[in-house]
Image (cartoon, rainbow, N blue to C red; front, side):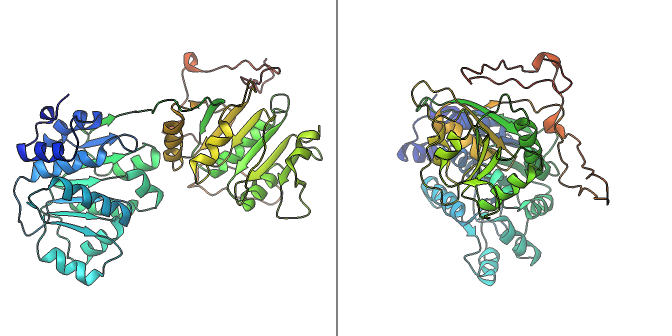
Length: 432
């Protein structure tokens, strides 16, 4: 497909060609006409799929002429580094400096930024909290905003910047709203639903890279929060016949302690911590001792200052938390010889972006698993009440993201003790 299919102006086509963009990306081909047509759009695509270039082109096309006093496009990004990146893209494609583009973040003084805005600009690229501060000081006039764009929306949610986004979007009530993100989840949907129109189009581009290496069997459990993770871990590992030797990775030694304490009923020596913070916790300083101890079934390992760890020969690798560097996880799941291993990942909504990056890196998707029917899915917004002499009463309502599946979609996995390649989740009512 040629750039002409995007229906850009000749100067923009020339700028794209000079910049080395000879053919449009899929996300550009599928979203450009909708954005130019005035429709609200949610565009979902991985890093490098062309999201930034898409809205930079659309903004330059939609505004058409420059030099208005009040800004006509507001672009919200998660941090100063993204502000710089977007400004570079505008500089690359806004060849004749037709539009006055202003970057706003915490590196500049508020008074200076107020003066820059009131001097007149066409496009503002800003972090949400600083943009909101300028709006509350009456420096940022949103009455003329035609195009309201949220980029890297998943990172904005991760940083907890939902409130300023919603306030600014609602203030620019006459504008068209466009959201770009790498993943969609409930928290992100909660942020954008107050201002996205019912006619919003959702465009998803799922580009998985080429397969880089053979990896062990991958399974993914998506859960709403940390407490539900704990419930799921306990529920799965209660099956001692299946999970007979497991390494559970967490990010910090304090989290390892929390996970260990959550197993309040287990046999002596069955569950332990690798290099525990506390001397009274059952633990190992050498993983080979864990491997050689028959009664040792679960070892909780913190990624914090870990270094190299030989986990060969352990049939189940479970990532309770995703490490900061995706390479840390990937090197553990690369297949060695004919060894049969199952790698299981737990992910909350906020961690889904890291899951996507891992999938991109290994060139395949992690298999999404059904949540067990008897799992307590904890509503994080409701704090359980503790009564003296009574068990904790936890709220276990399932949200929209955890709806019941049709019987035809339920998955059953046959477990072979010899291969460890598949798992059986037994019916808790005694059915085999």
